[in-house]
Length: 356
Image (cartoon, rainbow, N blue to C red; front, side, top):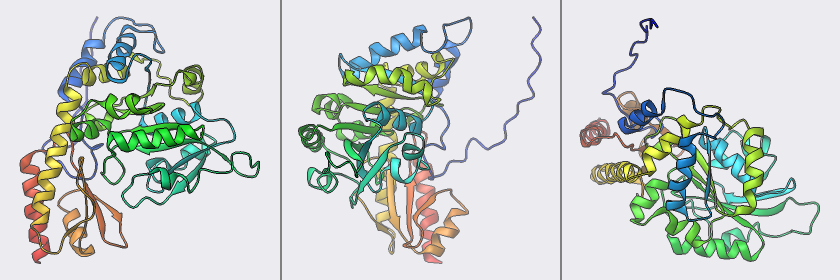
């Protein structure tokens, strides 16, 4: 068989990295190697392949004997399908106002999932039993969407962390009210690395019923999964994933990425590195007069406040986003491929722009 030469060419400088998002990073070389390993020949489609089967074993090693993984394309899809799996048609989800499902998913949980989000102000991005109680009522009121799920994010949208005991308290409180607990774990690896505990310590071991497992922000190309711990949701997941357009036909290529991350310690190495780079960035920023760090730097995010014109000039040199443009708040994210030189160059540029 003759193979035509590809006309593909590189359209970017692979040495340029910014601080806008860990989604900007490419795929880890070990993940790319795993994709090549899974290629070739035929494997059964839609998840009946050898790689997806082996992934189940790996998932159980991280999340307990009852855990079952349903690989999906992206984090929004994981969240929407997971929340549908643990709610009725009339159900509602309690979450922080800053939660990704409320702020950054284009209304998908409500528009595509048919869910009502009941939000609670959480200054540090974290819910508590007391905050949950602001929305946990009205189960018998037909005029109000029924609270059925509490959704938390680990690490949170503000880069903060729940301790295992804090999540246990939330799970106990939610379960006492007949509600399930969903954990949005798009950056779950960063949380485990920062807490220095296995992921099970703050998921199945403390009562989480279902979680969205992130791989893309941790070195995968496109790979997330819904991990069902409470087996009541398994039957629903099988049908909801297809209904929600999250069932990959060539699923082996989604599953093998999670296998590459989770089978050994690649997920942990990547997360530790991005966390360490965020700490290095925070240390450098603290030395710059006139720049305020807004939240504890506990994972791979640094939130800061600085003059608006300084941010605009700095954005011409490094990519990053405003978090609250009116207040002058910005977010700087570190990734698995962020280098010490990247961080030091950014801090130096920040100092230069602040001095102008």
